[in-house]
Image (cartoon, rainbow, N blue to C red; front, side, top):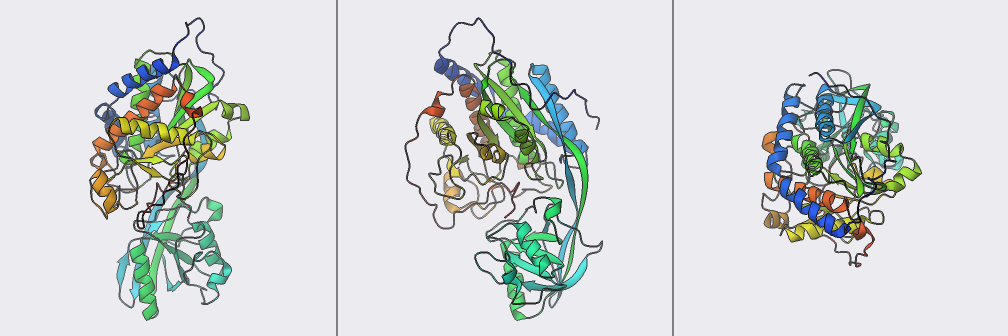
Length: 505
């Protein structure tokens, strides 16, 4: 598919534009409320669906996907660029180089004693086996809190020339396969420690030491049980194309508004190579695009500059957002008042998750930077006003808010779940099916137009619209204290897996 060329602007986009002079003073809270209501009213899942249809058509004409570094992503970026430019935004591409990856083979079969096929997912940046794979004996690493993380874990057995079977947890996948390599293993198979598929990354090419793939918890435990009965031989083939390519973020900002109070929202535009990525993450990209177009159509000059970003190479480890944040000077970082991220906002068996900015859930990685608690409170208050239930979710660093948090920028956002399994309590609250993934087509070819829940899509577009309208005029809520809330641990069995992009452990 032909890609429309565009002149790249300096990166990051110029931050020094001044708001229009000569305007009479405004009541910021009143202006914010008025614009927020207007954007919520005019931004809808029905209208945003046309962007999903376009992204699907692009994938259909470009090898079935829109992965960073591919024609499908280039065409998706050009589509977003053209619409934003026509709407009057200052739009630019931010180009960066990265290692493009594409799975060529991912196969695991038990050869003896009882032949069977086992579903396996190649880890991003894995080294490759020879074409046709290899046959070797499987050896399980003894389980503890840091299974397979240290050399001592491999002392009890001979792993030379064997494939190490390792339980997830305690350290990164890269550390596990590196330790197995030192012990002499020729491959590593890491199985999940919770329900759901295990789709992960070794972080970068340099970290990959031996061919590595991921299994479900059930498949891994079955292999462990087989090993308890005697020797297990497997046929193992993991091959991945890896080559340097160039890809581009799309960044657009309003021409007016105070640059010193820049409001930023983002979504990743790339898919995995296994499918068109309509929920993951054409949904967030389309929702963000529709609200941006409605903001332009309102013909309002915001008091604060509003900047939108469509990230590339998120699926390769948040590379687009990392490249953007890395190029911000200290002063430019200080100008970004907040960042909101929207990733997988229409999961077909989803729940409404809001990032836990104040760590009131007492789960995982702790609170976000100062101001993140207020962003969570504001999103929750909006959902409450619409009678929409919501659940806190941990800042795991697994999507594009991660680089912003790392440099202290207040962050928040929503998602509706990825490969994690919906609990009975969540099914009672949100509908859907307990015991099934929030998105059963996560990172799969079936993540197409049929994989969208329009009600979730509409709710989260409203969240985006309300945030844009509010923060375009009024940032005062970011300095209003959030009452300290006692941490409420989740009930046993309700731990959920978040979005797996950037997942390394």
